[in-house]
Image (cartoon, rainbow, N blue to C red; front, side, top):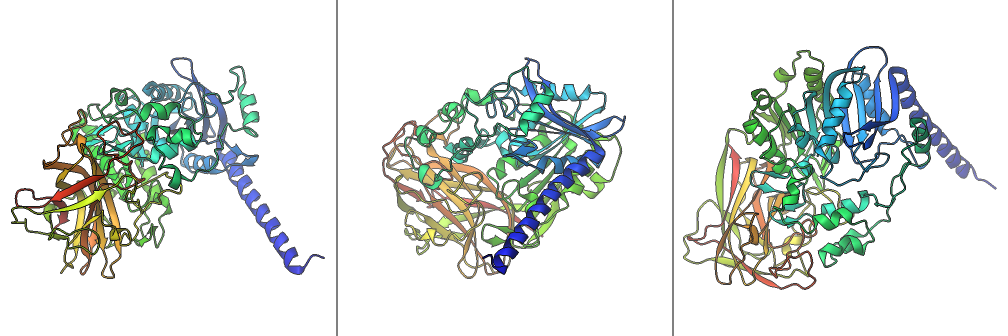
Length: 628
């Protein structure tokens, strides 16, 4: 017999399902009321390859500006037999404001023809898409590009081609499109300081399509494609992987093979060194390229590549040949994880740390930007919008500046110091404003690649169950003796650190090559220690990424780590801390310390590493302290 409770539960789920279906139908009905919907248009490229494109434009005979998103991700309106509303919701928001919305899959993705290669699809695909769109009878010839992560990464290099219709950009979380800029040779987030960032290993596993995937015949009509897409969206469904375990597999070059992943792209990339010529042949933006488009950039403190993202903004402001382009670059830096801008709430949590009410009127600002450049109408965007809007954690406020770093930020040195026992939270490591006067002073630790320091939180993305991004209390990990811990005394007054954080270490080792890592941490009065940013340097690349220079035992070497970045208010009574070690895994790959290629090796060497902080070797961190 069915109980009253069971009956109530069944009725609830029936009602809930009805509401969900009704909501799905509602957005499609609302969109159909205002838009001409043209799906699975096969847009031709110059080499004959056609890219699957959905077009949503206002009804009527007018000519409209276009907001264009190109993506490797699935935007199909159906999935697993159910309607998918995300694209329709975005299209409705765009069209109701008087724009056409065009979304397209990169070549080789889903219904698009050709072969996909992350960061390697022809730059001409973007250029050809602009040319096709501007020639449509419903287009006013002005195109703005919009997207986050992989939907943003292609925009920068195409901006270097300066298509006359590419009038404005809004790239968000765009680090995977940044190759070389200034001191950063990240090559699309593959590297940091010469060490691989493993996020792309797990990302490629989940995203790459097999070269033997089913293909839709070329003779299929648009009507065929729309019909087929209702029940067959070409989306791969890979088994889940325990990346917390599988990242440990050696050799590194076989990690995807070990999980039965697709390896065509991975096998090429894993063998490239940080300055390999192939990085400069694909779709990455490099700092020897011009830049031709006014841009409204969006970055976040806990994204994978906050420092090179900001460095690119500065590079364009300072180096674009066109003065109008230089003067029309704007930046927002939010206290969130990768692409989670609009998920900020009244109590925004980033990992375990609350950073307060970090909401911002994103849509209002973005559409005001597009209105300015695509509609040909002057508005008050420039009067209302600061050049740089950045969120300061700790004080939990949005602030603004004309530059990054803020003009009133003063680089201030803090020197490493100890009695020779900075190992762990319980050691005697200190950060001080004075250089050491000791003739010889150092801290030593053992780095065993088979027992690396585990990543806990951090500036990460896309790593499955291996690492959760954000700020987490590091104090438990700091009990390890292979972590050197240096901390200031409790602050007598609050200190705002906003800008790039530079660090110089003097190091030695008994192996040919090893890594050194650093984290910047805000220590609360109760001892909880929240990570702000982190970086790494593979020592063989200390003299540049175009050559490898190995270490000799007994020699001391200077290494300048790639700059970190943050905006954080260290409150009165808090302490500033840095952690130094030789691993942060699996955030970064392990250096096996052999001096070999690393990616093809299975045997490791234990390293005995030293960080020197004497009068001759003053290891330091330089903080941009804001003077108000």
